[in-house]
Image 1 (cartoon, helix red, strand yellow):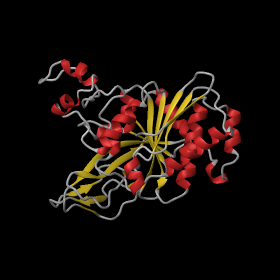
Image 2 (spheres, rainbow, N blue to C red):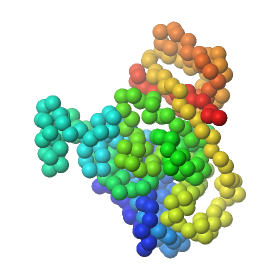
Image 3 (tube, protein in one colour):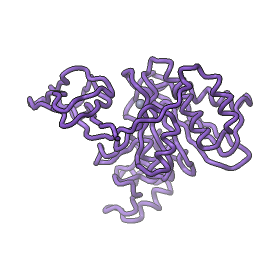
Image 4 (tube, rainbow, N blue to C red):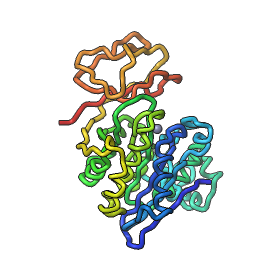
Length: 330
Ligand SMILES: [Zn+2]
């Protein structure tokens, strides 16, 4: 059973969904969301308008085991819309199917699991079941944040699925050091991350990376992102924001304009491939630098000045994501 709370102000307003531990070992979101819940319940943090839905433990089984995932990557498993419809690659709801015609929608809605299985659209792992449950919470929301941490030390960042002024202004308000655009373009076969589901459902959504798993700063950073979102969406007043802001350690109080990064390319790993060294996340790569050697002996050379994004030092399976390249926007 998915545990969540809904906190509402008297006055109607924006509705925010907060997800923690979509990856079970990335606990900063759990601690920051728990802090928020306690402050609301104790009356220390008053809601001015709107509503907050909190899910501190999104991937419960992985969280209990202290691992990233159990059967599937939950953040690649958002295949269902909030009303339980299976989403095709382009995000459209499937209304026709060769085998079953347009009966599919009606019968699926009636909970015909066998039919869904027949067309390969029923959850086939714990994480997929969880994604389908979580998707229901995306319904009728205005904004969503999925809070993560990463293996390597590095600056905070969040992802933008489109470049509308509305989304850009929301992401800038969150206060991460970098905003990465174009992630979905790396997955032409379909992007099934939480923020992509938000995009498909017309919600301002993002995934925020708050620093390394081990670093307690990641919790403070996640907390700051939550406060910034609440202020931006006017769920808390400026006065309440300030009361919380002054309680923060000096080092988290900076105001910074985010840098915009654009994804250029993703490389997948095939057994035998080796990077020339353990490139750091966001490390600068100059045009002409040799980045890696593939299994077939080819050399991967930077075609332009760029940045290393999310290097995977220990790929296990062929075709696993190996690393991405991005460039800084002017
Ligand atoms: Zn993660």
